Image (cartoon, rainbow, N blue to C red; front, top):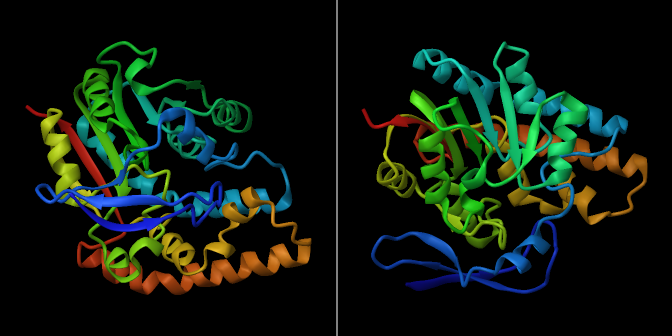
Length: 304
């Protein structure tokens, strides 16, 4: 392996420690080295990581925005389930506050959430009426063959052993069930342009940085065949570029860091960030059209 760069927690500033990112000289997989042990890694995840536990006006407006940009996730998964002809549970791994499952439930799908965070699982139950459990997928309390679909949006890059989650998904899925996985794409233009400043690296929380071939190869090794790729996410690609360019404006990062801004300043920064997101749309759309988008979403099924 050879060293690419050293970096620290640029977004949430949970630590000032620097971490080494390396690339394997043979397979070209990019990863954090050495990986922090579990007792240390948990310190880099704030309590409200990827969900909002407040009931403020700003939080409600943020949820309406998230509903809007989640629509392409919902459309992608809806199509996958309907084409599979399987009926049963939709399991969202890393469900956060449960908004995605609530939107799928509104469309008639039976959803269940799973998350490492007890607070996130509680928020899914309390705010959206989504049943959720705090567990790892490898030890999830579900019967084999009980799931019509399993989704993992931005989960695999956080795991020490992502193959164990894919193996578990293989056991839980029905014969023609669908697995939908999304990860940041380490072969995107943004990584080439910004390097360690690219938001998709997210040191030290991202232990592995996948390219398309890495993800496809892992799915193949775990008994899946890939049916479809999607290189653009309305929720993730433009916002990811905006955060890369101005991490101090990212709304979640500001909330987690407790910047102490007045209500007027919060509104100003929110509007500025939103303008940056809108301005990022043309570039991220072009990037994705060239199959070099900053995220990859994959639909797969068990090998027939």
